[in-house]
Length: 176
Image 1: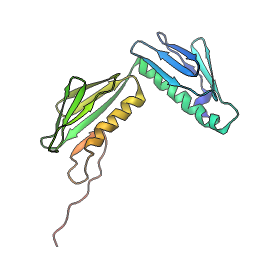
Image 2: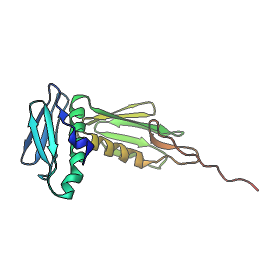
Image 3: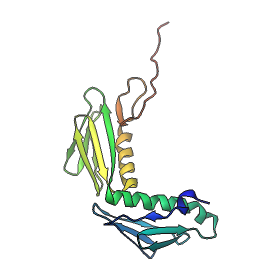
């Protein structure tokens, strides 16, 4: 029994939720998001609430709470949006936004260029990259791709990390 799935999801003003052919669409002031929902979980849109109930299969019961969480994230995304902040640490490490790409100089012999996905905006101030968007999944995946270019290393802490992420430091070699 899902604790998240049992709770009805409230639809705030200015947001419309529709379900057609297994596609759940959430329209709001910031964006429009669409996600495919399997028919195993029954979705009922009644006024300003959405209720979900699982089917008889174990897979449906497993997906029940997940779908409820996805719907809540979609509603939050189209009303408020999501933000991920990455910090660049290292001498000579920097980033800049050029058109639809983020250009990273992080200690390689070449620049690393990452294309910014549609629906995500990027801003760089000093050594802080701020990513904003309505789709939580796409935003998190792009932030992970940026971080993957140069993960923080444990000796000096150089690299790209999430804001507030703690890097466990290691001690260097000791002379005998």
